Length: 352
Image (cartoon, rainbow, N blue to C red; front, side, top):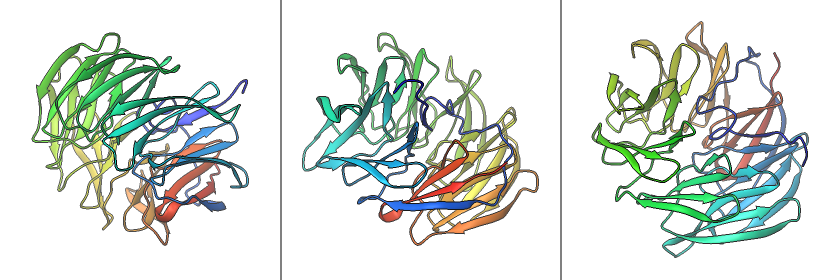
């Protein structure tokens, strides 16, 4: 596992921005199509060297070869895995929501030796993404229990917020930011779990958070999109859209991109919140976009992957599937991966 390359959209590579600083061809070439046995939550896949690592709601973690789509191996648990898998050195880290129980298992699995190293029972269900920060993992349950767990499986601290949390957290490396179903933004010290502030912002949040400079960006259940000061929680600006927002936004250097449950896709000015343009896709958008210099890739539940030209401000291409697009697209080594209902995986070649 020396010199390994690792990518997961919700962790190291995109830094919460889902942005690839390349200009690419909007025509995608299908390389292979494969499948697992269970469907997906609105997560993404993980890449490790030549392995595509796919969690599913059937309790499996499956590894595929990135060049051929051939299944290399599979781990099976009783329950469901609702977030992307974290890789630390030669270990996989993930959480299994156990079937017919109110508990979950935090699993550390040795990929090199093909064996489970440790499993820790945690209270509650975990449907938000894990955060890997140095040698530690942050996990947040649906009822607001936050754990800091080392990559060797030691619980360093835990904090009970007494809030329902359905939003993916974010971190700047020193602070954890999370929002609740009742509209609170909570800032937590990563080192000791102490709360910096806990501030009511909106009626409710289910959207993931993106961080850029000193700002947090996210949308609420009433369709308002916010820019917040990350040191105080103060609202810098807010913009009204037409419907509930649950996906984390994507950012490039100037703009913010996101969709809502009405199927409207927005481009906002990062500094002012002004609406640059809007596209109606006609289908629910509940995953984050993948952004390149010239195009944006946005799936929706209308069974389509839309390719949007940033300069023309229009859809220039789309790919239709038999099932609903469920995952945020992930790009790695000139290939694009996307998950579709019923466990299907599509891999495309992207040229510059």
